[in-house]
Length: 242
Image 1 (cartoon, rainbow, N blue to C red):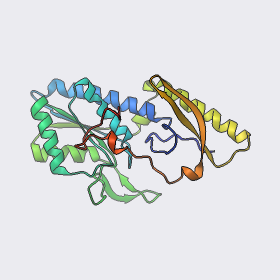
Image 2 (tube, rainbow, N blue to C red):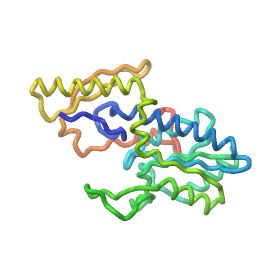
Image 3 (cartoon, rainbow, N blue to C red):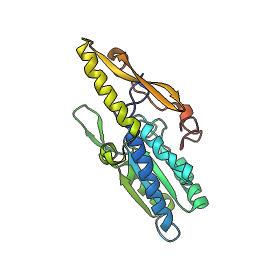
Image 4 (cartoon, helix red, strand yellow):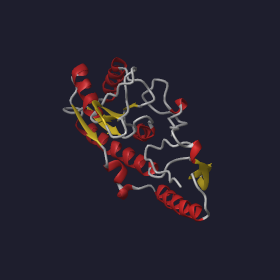
């Protein structure tokens, strides 16, 4: 029995993965708070804040950071689903800074160039053979300093984003517990090679139930951000995504 729990929210079939709701809340709140801080000193000092979030191939967590635009924050988001173009990126940031005086950037650790090379690739591999990533935020921040001469601050949420129990989502906690219970119950029923899933029954109000899927339909499948969740310029999210 496999219990879905990746904060990346990249597993298929299940409506979402327990852990994602809480990491999304943490990143949205943290990005908002840091953006307020940068805004307060933008007139005379720092004009850029960059936060790096988890998500090697899927931009769900980065999308949560983009929610700060609803609070009047100018934000540019770098998704793994969109190939990185430095000139287009710096031009977009420059426009935001000229209009608002500052800009926040949410960069997914999996942001990459057209040839597939990660912005944060270190040239080393982990035990799974995956490129080890680390440092997309300072790389992006230094690009802006070089190209636009802007003073910056950057942060990497790293383990904090998936461990911040003090800011957990109530529905997320309920779902995590429910799927754990379902996993045990299904094992006791003698079921094998399945994953308990969350089924969205209603969005407003949000209602859900627990079902199951075969692991053969889950293994090696990644659920990326749908392209209609990403704005036309590739740097933001749509109303549908929200």
